[in-house]
Amino acid sequence: MLRGTMDEAFWRERWSLGQIGFHESEPNRFLSGFIDHLGEPGAVFVPLCGKSVDLDYLAERGHRVTGCELVAKAVDDYFAERGEAPTRRETAYGALLSSPSRALSIALGDVFAFEPEGDPFDAIFDRAALVALDPADRARYAQKLASLLRPGGRALLVTFEHDIGSGPPWSVLPTEVAELFGEDFEIESLASGDALEGNPRFGERGATYLRERVYALTRR
Image (tube, rainbow, N blue to C red):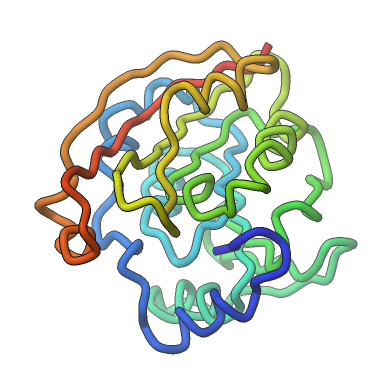
């Protein structure tokens, strides 16, 4: 995960202490529900991926998956939990760790520094990435995603909306999604659902509502 570009220590500490409430043990409900939006199997980028099982879900459906993660422990945990010894290759942006048996790799480093070695990606899946960033970095992040996706490429963007006034995860309203991505993407709000019951820590922090929403983005 990444909080802006200067708070690497914050996320390293979260992983070190096991404070990773954002991690889901099952594929994200919106990914499984709307994966067809990503199109035919192709090259998919998953920013700030942690050790997400969404990587597996995409790979199992024929996609060539590249994640990007700042914290080495998250990447190490991902492969260790699957009993895999990844190959490691140094690149211009950092190390690339690849599964020995699947078309799946994770780039270890800052998502803002990441560049694909070949063509732009066919698709992007963002769950808990935009909402993890400091609000000051959102516009630059949206531009980064646009630069990584080919014209006509598709993305699924999952956000949170809440009323605690702080983060991460930060609240991102539909109006801001339109402002951030409207210039480079066609945007469609696909679905939303209550998420407060399954995330009691938000209630403990004073939230009266927590809504998870998924958007379909198509690169102009």
